[in-house]
Image (cartoon, rainbow, N blue to C red; front, side, top):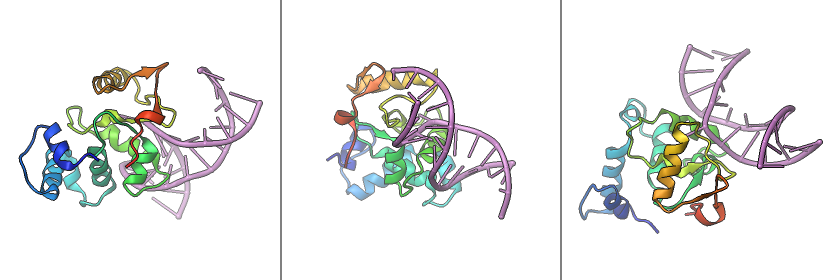
Length: 138
DNA sequence: ACCCTGACATAAG
DNA sequence: CCTTATGCCAGGG
């Protein structure tokens, strides 16, 4: 399993500390400032936390993301949150795709997303990601 | 409270 | 495969 320490290393942030510390610091480092205007447990914050924990080289669906954040059947909420992320966010927004394995983000974002996925070794065949293989199931 | 919106999900034709 | 119709559900007016 991908520990938060590994995540931290991946995002080039920090040194050996407790996983909890690391988790916290990574969260603070990559979460949009807008989060702090709401309660720490807001949907935005919760979804960002889960988003940050998606391992490199894997993907989740909008529905998965919402559910893992505590909002089952609120797939559109996940989309709403992603849409609001700053363009320069360090969160792995590109690891979220729809249930058919296709990219939902309209152009020009779609191209950026595809490129980022391919950079992680996730290739799209016929415009689709092999969900059986790349879907993240913790 | 009501209404509209949407980086969704599913089923049906 | 593609298109359409429905269901969904939290946010923001």
